[in-house]
Length: 91
Image (cartoon, rainbow, N blue to C red; front, side, top):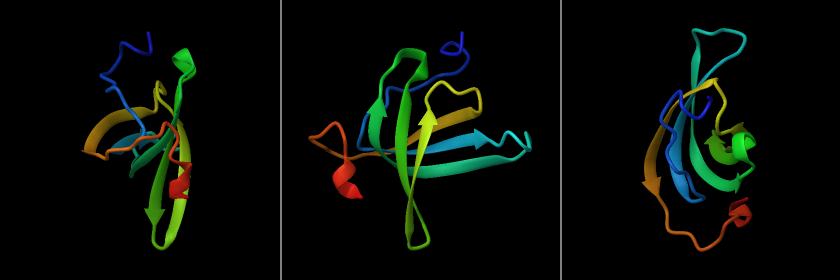
């Protein structure tokens, strides 16, 4: 049922995406995360992806569940050519 509620694109490491997430404390506030996917963990409905983004001069990694009802929108901004499944060398 969670898979059918919204359109979820096929994401891969190397994709630069923008994700809009509703904050659980304040349902009206939508926070945007923009970054590169450095890892995917495929586990059915519990699939997660690791997003690396930059805030000022600091890099932050977020692990987000792919099928979370708090994620409202995905937008693929760019596709980088990568040859690895895990891009931990970007750290």
